[in-house]
Image (tube, rainbow, N blue to C red; front, side, top):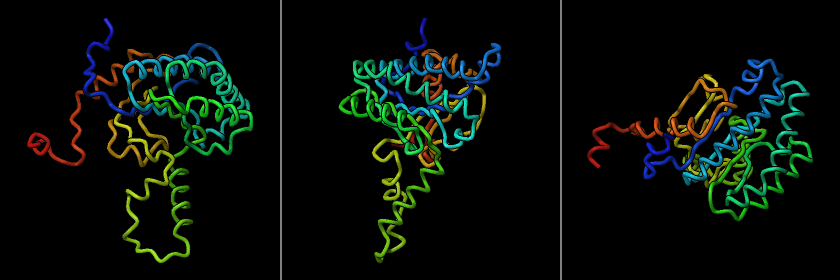
Length: 248
């Protein structure tokens, strides 16, 4: 019996973020090269997108390629970009059919012109969708994002007499790439690694973290359900006490 029946649909996280880790190790365990693992990881992502849409999750952010990943061997970077283009070519119609909107966060100016062009085409085609918001973190790092936000804020305030106390976390947030998107309530990382790896550092301030030993290509709908069930067992206090929550 599927674990989906154990999920309380009235208490779903509105935003799930995922660090999709373990493609290379999964491939090496099978005597294959890392590229094969990345190709198989696409299947897992497809399952998670489908499950999220079925559950009516509002936002799903996936860490597809970090700014640090540019330092990988050229062959692997090129293959990853190729997989991205192939996936967009293959899946765009499916996204439209299932009312899924694609957006991207990150330093997309660093992407090759063909990758960026295909990404923007899918973003434009799906812009009217009202179902799941699929956010792809591409050429992204949180330190890059926060630095860029600080630059944009500084540029806007340049030459103006501003009270420093008027700058707070609420008006700073509007300069982040995720402005208008609620912070993730659940962050999942696969492969057993227990770190955030420069991913949504600002946004994960009160996110529930879920780590699993499962390597990304083996992640499935049922594994997603496990993470959501675990999330629903937690008490989210946001700095308050349990007693304060009970007094509401």
